[in-house]
Image 1 (cartoon, one colour):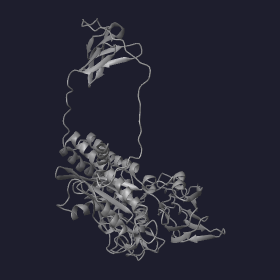
Image 2 (cartoon, helix red, strand yellow):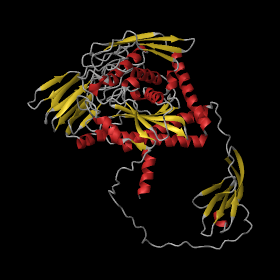
Image 3 (cartoon, helix red, strand yellow):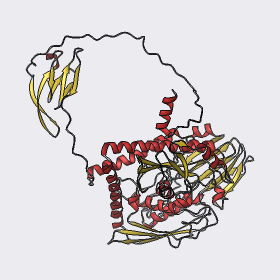
Image 4 (cartoon, helix red, strand yellow):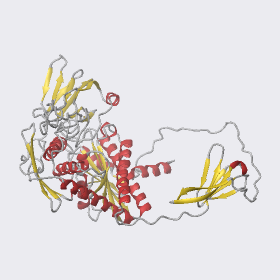
Length: 637
């Protein structure tokens, strides 16, 4: 049993911890038998000349018409053998015997089909770009990332990853460039390659089979500290072939408030534990003791390191799924073919984005934020080279708040927007950015320097950048422009959620009510799970009818959400567009601003700022009314 358990654990997680005692938690016994006995009648078999076929016909198979004899089952006896192509007709079914197969009537009067001639192997797949195989590999690579996501969801510990699906998984080539991802979190996916590149760069010559690494450092490939990325190399003996990675938003990673997303943080240290290129697994040994020491050793340590460790184990398991599936792909298609198609899918993505650039013209746009900052973008199109420059010069400088967005976040927004503009069904990958030059001023809101706080930059500023880009492209009006990041917790519980609103309208299409948009792609925790896992009651959650921006094409409607606390909790909110309404385009109306309230025990309603922190007592409630997206086009009377 121990050997079987360790084998299963190694297959699932990629490591075995023999220092821990094994606990047999449950034993089940299954007894089979005792039913009615059944014995099939055996017939004598004999070789004879087959009876004349009932008729002759033809059927289409193997790319051509096949001439076939038709036999009636009633005319056959045990021992008869019929070589294909042929057809056997029974009262309730017709059996087609293909070329290379044989049908035999056995002693039990079963019609048994066997292949008697070896199947001719199809022409080997070459390394040149075949349009059909390109589509196959597009979906194969995405499928691997999707399977990783399923493994992560199934093995995760926290509500945030298991229920809200706040995670992303992706496949990378040997140098760390993104090949394919599942349709998870855009803000994760467009920035994960920077984390993989950091691990490759800082461990050059030291990476061994069985190793895995963790990183959340925003200044070294991460986004914000709650997002921990686990990176695993895919080896062929001693050579690294590919990489797989999974990024999960951990419900708490320390910092000055539960949930690690305090609006009052002004330095990265106040936002939690900084993980920069930490070796999680050393040649198959999970470094659990060292990981606990890291999570509990900072000035503001993680509040629930057990939850962190268990979610990281789930990320390791997800990566192991990716490793297995990539090895399976190599066995099926050979290494040169897989490597070639990794390049081909990126080349195809680059060409798809160039076709988008062919339709664009020079443009510019600016959005204002609630904090008094501005994000400015200029898109310059070079028609001859089929390239575009996306220049954020003019954006506000680095701020003393935590709304600074690390460079990978802005890069992720650019990648997402241009991928959305592509009509073809292609995986979002590094090829999408080849025709695009991104210019971000140093020490700006979009490229802060250590030790600036960044937690809101990942979730809030990323949405503003996305709106600004879509505005410049005249592709759609502003979405709500915020993730409405709600955190609450104490020493025992920590919870985080992002809250949906309506999607924006664009040329020829209206918005949709109550959905997550753009850089967030999570779902809200089911009420039953929320109330079972935390001492809260979801008192009200409804769509606010006719709240979306008006226009020829109307934006989707927003929501109102009320959570009543059954226990005293610290609560923080990081949100935007509580002062500045999301914009409409080409005559479309702006959306509505959002509101945050606390309902105190005495019934008094206390308004919270867009970024605020408070303590909520048992019996009190937090109320979030989301901003709504903008409409598109003048309303036609």
